[in-house]
Length: 304
Image (cartoon, rainbow, N blue to C red; front, side):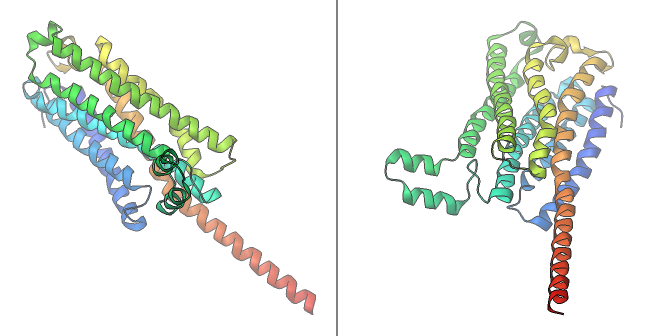
């Protein structure tokens, strides 16, 4: 396939291949673990990113005349980041359940019902129904909408309007800034909750460790989301980033190193916990069997 933007096309194609492999693994894991597992959101992330990379390849091949693919790419990228943030909260909650049998971040339906039945006032009932996870999820939804609507507003602008910083462009930047800022704030909260769970609640689990590992990558992704709105070298809609050979190499490097790579590494770390968890579970079961066998041997020796 020939690309109008060669560097962008190559980068988009590489990550399309990587995300196809990732999504295939995620599908296999979800089939084994079920749709209610913590890995379902990671599968959704893969689907969004595959769709986004397809749009990225199409835009690199067809050029600026088909800007609709650019808008679609940006929207799917935002959706992918949105799902990764939710995954971090899922992982912390599952770690709490695995270690202490309860999660105050995201209590199960039975725990919520028990709290509601014990509530005496309207405020208590509201707190019982709305977990911390629900509150954060409800905040992420409008943030996601701001980013999508802000990006979609640019679809109707002409080149002259973009260069002239029209009112729509300013509004678009404000909406995207608010949305990306909420995403970054929620990322920081998720990281704080992971540290609190580990140091205060003494929850030592591979899911918590996974959040620790992905923390710097998600933070870089969040900061990049804001910087890309205002820094000229990172702005998709600034024509100075387009050369006769397509997108400038420096711009492609920013986009795929600070954006796509950060998401892919985070998603890969999260999905790898399935194999780590399975291996640790087998080891624990083996240790229990060994302990039981040793106990039985001791009893036999004592009776004899």
